[in-house]
Image (cartoon, rainbow, N blue to C red):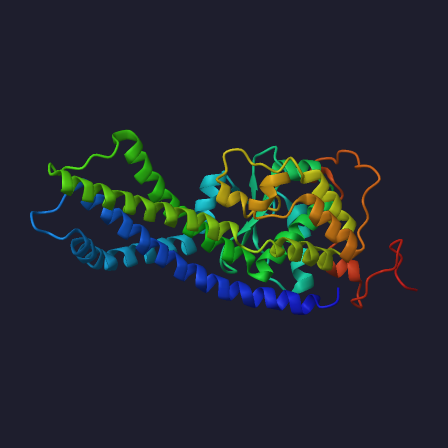
Length: 360
């Protein structure tokens, strides 16, 4: 596609800039939420006689800043260091060895060799849903996770297209960006949820007996709650505002790797409407191959609709809509083994002509 290289490298560069801004935003929103929590605390518990609510809140906030900064740094460290394990716990994903799925490993290796990429780890989620996602922030961590439903319902070409899509997310830096976004949304959403559960169970009561003080304390509580709500909302907006162009670029990257736009189109059509992995948090679903947006909800989704993605592949990559869906494929273990990249290209590095004949 004209301008594809420029678009790809611009996207990778922009992802690095976005990652820095997201990390800065995490600290800023953590400070705002902390200030709101302090206001709520002082408003509910009152202050010593003669103390000024505004200055007392600022004094407490300045004292809390080093601890908030340290806590946020610790959360970022844990997110970077253990994100694959945390996501594995949330999804029930289990790492698999080459002996468990040799055919799947060979598919992934062939794609990686063609681009000189380090081969990611593989994991499987036991689910009837048809989906996949990549996780990790460096070559030691990168993992591609697929569902058993995906392996059972897609043929080899379609599975290869999905793997190539997730590899492109790794190559483009999308996975690292999404991990940061999930970290931001996760910690702030957790704090916000705890605060609102506390209010829902106990109500809002101030300890002051003076009417003027009680009124002032209630104002402080309301302002604090407003700051917490804003921080919580902005954390969600940050996650949802990540450019959906990353999915179009990953689809295009998969076509570039596999040279098979029809397989990507077929995979998208099969997965559409069957992608929801039961019990998986929304932040992880945002990282998946498909998140099933449709109609009005498409406006607030991290993924374009399947219709738009398929149309882009038809218009820009020369893909064709299938006349009919192929029959249900056999289990992946029962399918014919794939040749390696070396076997495909022969002794001189050239691909054999159609029909598998070597040049005479």
